[in-house]
Length: 275
Ligand SMILES: NC(=O)c1ccc[n+]([C@@H]2O[C@H](COP(=O)([O-])OP(=O)(O)OC[C@H]3O[C@@H](n4cnc5c(N)ncnc54)[C@H](OP(=O)(O)O)[C@@H]3O)[C@@H](O)[C@H]2O)c1
Image 1 (tube, rainbow, N blue to C red):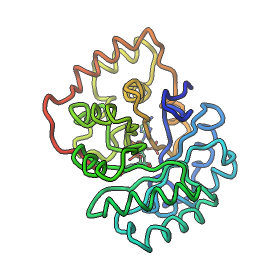
Image 2: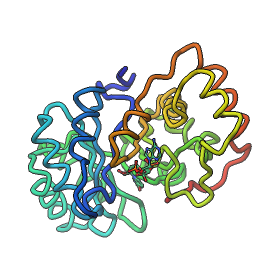
Image 3: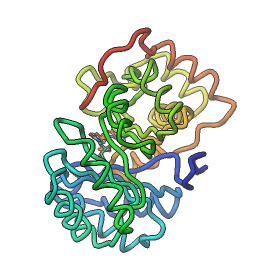
Image 4: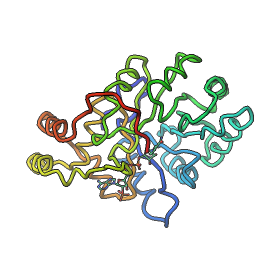
């Protein structure tokens, strides 16, 4: 797999961990290790909120080699307090079995004190416990508010899928203008209330058959073409292989044209959709 054009040498896609370690054990470790070893995936996304996911990620870090992974973790807004921040970070590091997080994000804004957030994130960066920091679920106004206290926000992780393209109107251009790396969560649209299924779309499926490509791989490719890092999750090796299967260059124009017409971007700004 090609790497990202970002400053860091990241894979174009990453694997999420929500819910994966909460149910009965399955072959998820095999899924992650296959993604890393066979497909060159480097990004793993987790959060203190995701139950046992941090402990699960620890096993992957150990087996894949910590240096091979770009690890994203997230702090809850309620823990951004004078004492709470370090406590959360230390607990996460312990559960992850590592001494640093590559990218530490505020999970969502709520009523977090943004000035305190910047101070705490910068101090954690100075201490070497995190390498970069950013936010998640921040709309344009939230970013503007945050940028009163800092001119360096590494990334904003938001819901972005072919099925929900609201960020293309204002937020994505704003992030590009200010050098804030966009990360899309739920890139396959899971959990989105009006989530259609690409496999129900006859036109797209006809083209996928013509070019012998997997529709989920096309959905993800459409996101990464925007230079957005696409996060998806799967507990299935079969789905992993579908999602990471090749989409030949010569098929792109026709497939994207169909996607853009079947799932058009909105023509006006509305509040960021969060799921
Ligand atoms: N920052 C935030 O607020 C936030 C919010 C949500 C998510 N996230 C992050 O983003 C990651 C990805 O998001 P997500 O897990 O919500 O959504 P997603 O990747 O859009 O969808 C995951 C779902 O799609 C299914 N799936 C995957 N590949 C498939 C395929 N080829 N065919 C059919 N079904 C397939 C998976 O089931 P199988 O297991 O059966 O494959 C799973 O149910 C999360 O794990 C989390 O790390 C962040």
